[in-house]
Length: 261
Image 1 (cartoon, rainbow, N blue to C red):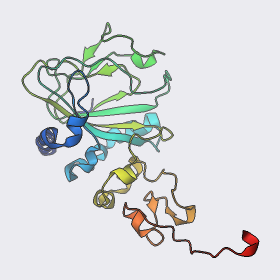
Image 2: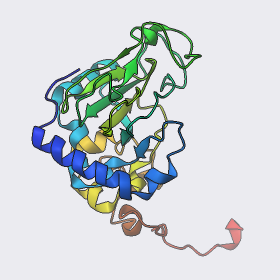
Image 3: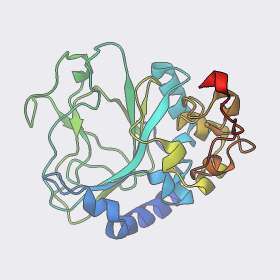
Image 4: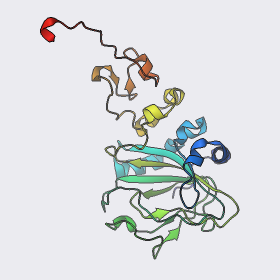
């Protein structure tokens, strides 16, 4: 846990805006399929300027991600989970699709926007479980603990660690926001080059572009038409595509010759 990872003013603004989005965002209702009725807000970086850079705002978080995942790590998604009042704990699970004990493939960074406690659903984990070469096979496990962390801190855990949300026995929502980092060869859950609005992409810093995987994207044009730094087609070749729309290839139309048919 890294304390004071976020400024107190940002924590307050983010919490207020996210709890508004829990009530208004259509994706939240569409994704409330878990037994706990979790509020799941996807693609958070596209939901307001306040959310566009929080996941790169603390240098120590990024250094830890580089240490364990390599300097070319990418974000799979940037989201918010809200645990409603009086919700039961979610099942223990691991975020990695394969078990590779001793070789980290992913890292979950959780930013509490309210104090995490054992009573309000603070993330529960099984310490050392990232070394176990199987997935959890039950709702609970001996030795599990609830993480207690102050609002504005950053809780970091390997995706292979057995974890879940805890039971919220209070009358308030347990609000947080997260970024899920992986090694770069794991396919992203979101194609941020298309999932983010053109305005968000234009504002993105080089660090944000790199972590969102834009620089590592395979071209969907010919390579000479592709800008590796932006992860988008070069505007002079594909103006519509580079703005997030659909455009025709800029190659000139050539009439078929008799010897080419």
